[in-house]
Image (cartoon, rainbow, N blue to C red; front, side, top):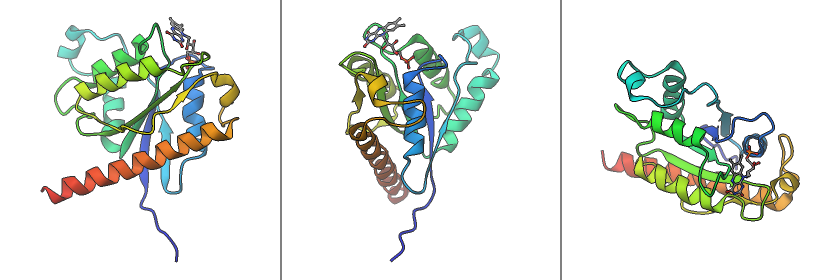
Length: 193
Ligand SMILES: Cc1cc2nc3c(=O)[nH]c(=O)nc-3n(C[C@H](O)[C@H](O)[C@H](O)COP(=O)(O)O)c2cc1C
């Protein structure tokens, strides 16, 4: 019997702007092992200005408009965060702050999975706890498990592929769980309409 998967789109956000970012590489590697039927698009947050309510009052900057539309139109979001001083980098928080502004903030009830990597052993465990809290505050549906903390990240992840099979397996499980989570949330939403 042939299994037909309906297309499932994921927009992926890296919390690092640098060219050789491990976290951007994690997303590119995730894209390379995306399960059948899943498309992962790694987006760009480098053109998001610093949040300023005076700018917001004149309308969203085009970069924020684009990101909001990408999130709105995707089935789910995947965020890879670095850890900066035991939390998430300012560029990521700044981007989330922009996206969170009304009306129709696109993280509301959006299925989201998070992961991250660092050169140290803890693999962004503290940053991910903070990221989860921020996303909860935005009413996103953050996938509870599996949690993926990639320590000693350069051993585990290359430029756009996984070097370590176990890490690839964890990320595969994360992606499959994200799709199942999103599908079950969609089914609940249909039942309650
Ligand atoms: C300002 C700053 C603070 C950092 N704080 C932490 C930290 O608290 N914990 C940690 O594991 N790594 C910390 N690091 C190291 C980062 O994990 C490392 O630079 C990582 O490669 C950043 O992610 P990226 O490769 O995706 O850019 C910090 C790095 C910077 C620049």
